[in-house]
Length: 223
Image (cartoon, rainbow, N blue to C red; front, side, top):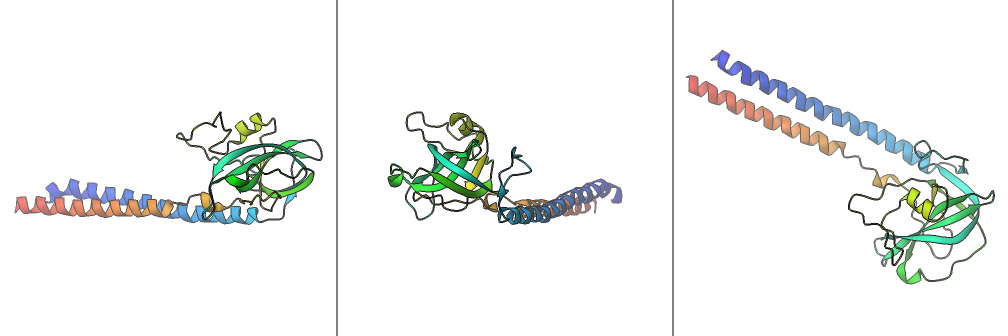
């Protein structure tokens, strides 16, 4: 009988060990991700620095910066919603710095009924965070050719459309014209590793129960 249950028992123990180790790995990943999110959160709220000459989309993502110059009036609307507010858009506008650079600024949210209101021209100062968001998915439609409405922030495509460099600052302080800033935060960065860990641990439990049931059945058949 021992020979008959040896292989199923060995397979059951090995399977449980693998599944439990995967669960433990996900728990370790969860703690690692929590540390990364804490570092990002600290960077987001750090003291703004002057915009660097060549921002790095990886190293400088979320870095707080400050620029001076003027809004050019060239903008793109991105479909967006805020809880408790009427439908509206994010305003992505070209900003010309004092040294002649053309960059993009996500000024924030404005409701549809206020979109047509004139906006103030002149010198401005923007405080915000560098960002290269990946909002689009495979199901995101392209910009509407008739209305000019975009359905996701696509920095390279928007920069090409507005003849600007692919650098986006998400304003964290009001830039005027009734536009409400929507600052960057870590809420959009998932940390789902605890859910994955629970899945692996539950699979290990199921594997163990199935192994026990199989061994019990073999023992009954050999008695």
